[in-house]
Image (cartoon, rainbow, N blue to C red; front, side, top):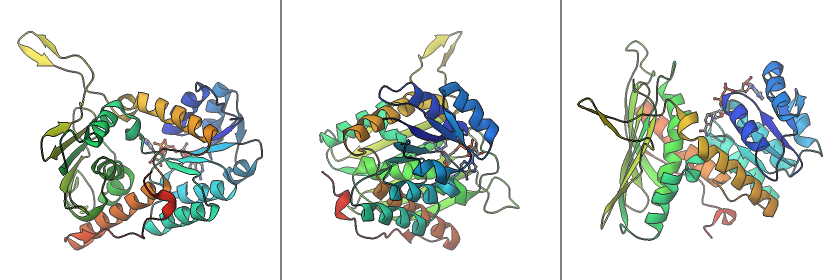
Length: 331
Ligand SMILES: NC(=O)c1ccc[n+]([C@@H]2O[C@H](COP(=O)([O-])OP(=O)(O)OC[C@H]3O[C@@H](n4cnc5c(N)ncnc54)[C@H](O)[C@@H]3O)[C@@H](O)[C@H]2O)c1
């Protein structure tokens, strides 16, 4: 790969550093509306600074694009990449509405082949991937339930809507991916962080029904008070399997047992971000991306939208998307 485009906030800078160390890739250009941030990251990578995403996307010297701008810009920038025929790794969520998600999907369908990958990087996390393999090998039989916990340190000013579309969407994708089934219905309950702001979010639970009859829950904590954890437990017909939350040693000392908890997502998923870009680069050099697809991005938005409708109505809500196009058939 000759060149990449990056946009550089917190995660953009992480991706820039990782790509600059990825065999077969180079960071050629960096774009941010904040030119000082772009310049700082570009100078670390020896890359050119751009101030306009559209210009960069059509630059013939740019082979592939990684979008790490704020959520609201993802759909337009991803569509511009697809229309320019450039592979694009778009951070989650792929869009902020189902309608915009469908526009990205239809742009790729018009191209006729896969160009887009969505940044659901848990598929590259070892403990999640091991759980996926164990389920695929039939170790616990048919999966009956999915219990996910997404435990954050303090998230300033979170609303329930943003918690769902920006954060819980990781868990929505994780549940679809690991259970191998679409989520067909949701029911959301939550505790506001500020009693006078009813749409503020401190803690939320989404109850799930899957299209194959399985059930589940996604619990979201906006302020754990102790750090960051992502936990998954799946109950099957012949056993139960769960991810390992921590990799640090268990310490017994002075009448206590203790274990470190990662402060936040950059530390917890550091290796997954490295593997995500390495596998993305290798896959697009070989032909097309293999990671979470525009279909995954779209269906996760369909479920997120149902969650928001459940918040508004106080009732269960159906998650119904368009039929899965053949381009996204399981292989
Ligand atoms: N996959 C993950 O685990 C993960 C983790 C963190 C963030 N994200 C996603 O990455 C995106 C960025 O998150 P962040 O935490 O780095 O945010 P951030 O606020 O730190 O960075 C966003 C950057 O985008 C720039 N920006 C603003 N408008 C822009 C535009 N129109 N075009 C290009 N750049 C623009 C800002 O100046 C800023 O530097 C979000 O969509 C978020 O959901 C994903």
